[in-house]
Amino acid sequence: MTLGEQIQARRKDAGFSQEELGERLGVARQSVSKWESGSTVPELDKLIAMSKLFGVSVGSLLGLEESEGADHELTERELKALEAIAKRLVPPPAEPKRWRRWPLVLAVVAGIGAGVFLMSRINSLENQIGSLHYNISSIDNTVFQQINSLTGQVREILEEQNSVTAGKNCEILEMDLRAGTVTFSLTATPRKYREGMTAVFSAVGPDFAAVEVPGEPGAGGSFSALLTCPLVDDITLSVGFTTDGVTVNQELGRESYLLGDTKLSFYGNLGWSMGGTPGEKMEVYSLEANLEWIEPGQYKTREGWQELEVEKGSLRLWINDAVFWSEERQEIAQGMRIRDLSIPVEELELEKGDRVILSSLYTDSTGREMETWLDGCRLNEEGKLENLAPYEEEESYPWE
Image (cartoon, rainbow, N blue to C red; front, side, top):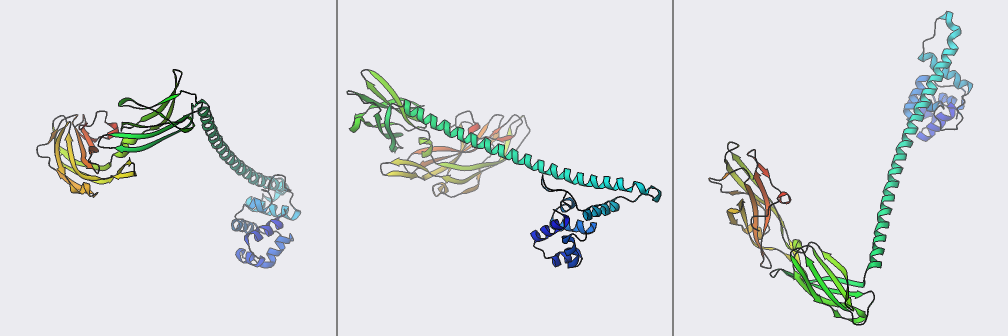
């Protein structure tokens, strides 16, 4: 595109009329018309003003930054304009050396054009590299997701092929929190039923030996049973089919957080101030207990899932394995916050290694009494109290 065509195209893209563009550049509409027709060439300051107005470089207006393969040949009039630009950028040589002017002008013009074109190409390459990195990242994510999906599908197919059951079902029927037990309703259908086949359902947990019950035969070669076992976390349920003295076992399911979900979650913290000389016994000046909120638990009955609440509760402070202070608070049963509750600390001294734990002893709506962690700290080797998180505590809780 010629310079005139560039100006006309940029003007129309910007939504300007010839008169509006002339007003912004401080020239008459006729001047803009002559630029676009190619009868005249704008001055350097007008070219710069137009480049800023259109948001493009001067080289782009001059046709030196068009896409690859475009015609970069300039008209004779535009060449003269470049000569004029070169004259303004480079002072003319002394009169005796006038014969050297044209090579210098051409060198400057060539340098400007080459520099502009080179910068344009560099920017284009940087954009292409950035786009390439983005595309590679997108491809990696897509391939990773597809591999995971295929892995899951293959795993399901292999499990299905290796399964000895054609159908299975595990359901929590009810929980007895006072007795600490849970009852499951279990059903399993063997893939290949044979006359005389028997089935035994079992439950295994980390704190109890396997509990087994025989399966009752049903329609379509299926077996079912009600199985009651201790209420703990991490229960594995299985079935074993026996034919002619040969038993084949199949896992039916796992329950990971049954007991944990029946416990209420308490959120609070312990504040303190103390003094003394490190290396000796440290005197505690003040302790303040805070209870922020209580998250209810839930359990299953034959009527459905029930929500657990607090019937009554106390705050307790443990020093190592002994209760140092305890106080029943109605706010706990009412689900209210307790802020800055002062704990008596007269003559309370701590030695290195001593731990201080704030807990809540509560009775839930089923009559079950439990105790739970709120906050804790330990006197370290430097004689300072440091926070003690429950998951960092290797020792058991003092109430266990």
